[in-house]
Structure formats: C-alpha cells, structure tokens
Amino acid sequence: MHAGFVNALKLRCPADQDASASKVKFVTNDLTPVLFDNEYFVNTMRGRGVLKIDAAMPLDSRTRPFVEKFASDHNAFYRAFSSAFVKLSSSNVLTGKQGVIRRSCNRLN
Image (cartoon, rainbow, N blue to C red):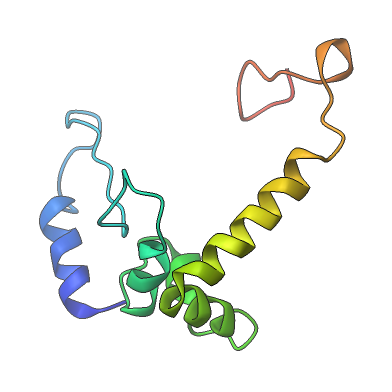
C-alpha cells in the first residue's frame, strides 16, 4: 500500500477511536464512486487498495495482467464487465419458494 495513502487512512480512521461511539465511516479507494469507470483498477495499481485483496491483486502474477489491462484500457474493462454481467444474469437464479432469502447474512435463515 502506498505510504501516503496509509497516512490518509490513519487520519480518517484513528486506531484509538472508540468504534462504538463514533459515526460509521466508509473509506474507498475509488475516487469516483458515482461513476461507472475503471478508477478502482487505476487506484489499485497506485497502491491505494483499501482491503488486503485490493492491495494483493497487482502483486500476484495471476491477477496483475488483468489489473494492468483494466487500469490502462477502460474499454477492456467495460467489455469484460458486460460479458460477466450477462453470464451472471443468465445463470439459473432461484426465485420464489425455490430460493432462500436470508434474514441475517451470517446464517442461512
């Protein structure tokens, strides 16, 4: 993770702050959260990954080529995203009584 980004996170989320007494804070490495773009990958390549997986993707030889491609070519990102979205939306989604709706995310029902 880029040192300047680490310092910025520390200022926004001090370690000695009582989490129960504070307002919930949300930190993102995407500086354009209301736009659909490839900025997530651009910032990940710059060492601005908030989560461990974000920081690891550009370092791993299996995922680095994808992160580099999507960071440098927004059209490649759009094509890959739309292809994945179509595949996901055409998978056999269970609905009605066939599916399971979780009342709590940490257990099945």
